[in-house]
Amino acid sequence: MGFWSLLEVASMPVIQVLIISLVGAYLATDRCKLFPVEARNSMNKVVFVIFAPALMFANLAQTVTLQDMVSWWFMPVNMGLTFLIGGLLGWMVVKILKPPPYLEGLIVATCSSGNMGNLPIILVPAICDEDKSPFGNRSVCRTVGLSYASFSMALGGFYIWTYTFRLIKGSAMKFKEIEESEKTAIKSSNSDLEADHKTKLLGAPEGELVKEETGFWRKGVDFLHEILEELRAPPTVGAIIGFIFGAVTWLRNLIIGDDAPLRIVQATAKLLGDGTIPCMTIILGGNLIQGKIIAKARNPHTQNYNI
Image (cartoon, rainbow, N blue to C red; front, side):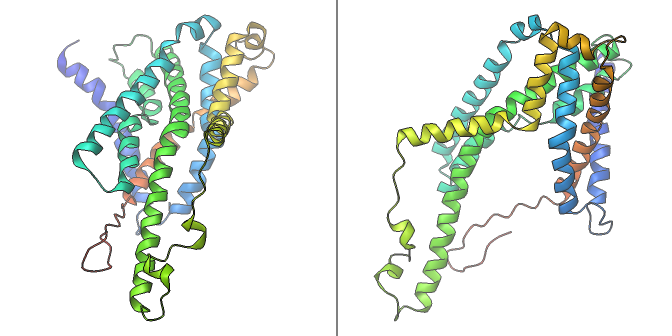
C-alpha cells in the first residue's frame, strides 16, 4: 500500500469526525439554538449512563476471553506509565515556566492525561470501515479494535478520576481562595475606617483562619472512597460485566452466538452502544463552539478580568 493510499485511509476517519463535529457545532450556535448547554449536558448524561456502558459490555463480552484478559496485562501498566511520565513532564513545565499557583495542578493534570480521551472509540471503527484499511477483515477489525478502545477508555477513566481529578480539584480550590482574597481586599479598601483586624488581613472567614490538618489515615480513606466511586461509574461497571461474561464460558454462551438463549441481550446492548459514537462526536462539536475559556487573570491596576 502506497503513501497516498495510507494517507487516504488515515484521513477519512478524521474527516468524518470533523463533519459530525461541525453538525454539533452548528446546532449549538445562537442562530440554530437546537443544542444549548442544557441539551448537551442531558445528552452527555445519557451517553455516560447508557450508551457507553452498553458499548463496552457488548464489545468486551463478545471478544474478550480469560486468555485475552491475562494477555492484556500490559495495558494497565502502559496507562500507569503514561500518567507517570506525563505528570513528570508537567511538573518540569511548572518548575521552568513558574505559572500562577492555581494553574500548577491543572498543567500537571493536562500533561498527564491530556491524550486519554474518547477519540479512539470514534476513530477506530471509522478506520476499520475503510475499504483500503491495512487491518484486515472489516468486522474483526471493528470488534477487536473497539474492545481495545473500550478497555483503554475504562482504564483511562479510572486513572483520570483517581489521579487527575485530585490535581484539578486542588487547582480549583486555590483559585477560589484567590478570588475570595481579592473580593475581601476590595471590601476592605471601601470600608477601611470600619475594618477590623480580620479585614486588614484580607478578611479571611473565621472558618478559614484555622485550617484543619487532615491526617494520613483520612487522606487514605478519601482516596479509597474515590476509587470505589470510580468503580461504580456506569462505563466501568459495563466494562467489568463485559469482562465477566467474556471470561466465564457458560455466561458467554448465554448471550453470544446464534443459538444463545439470551442473545437478545447482546443485540440490545450492541444497538444501544451504536449510539455512543455519533452522540459523543456531536457533543464534542457543540462544546467546541461554546468552549470559551474564561481566564480570570487579575490586572494589577484594575479589578477587571480578561476573557
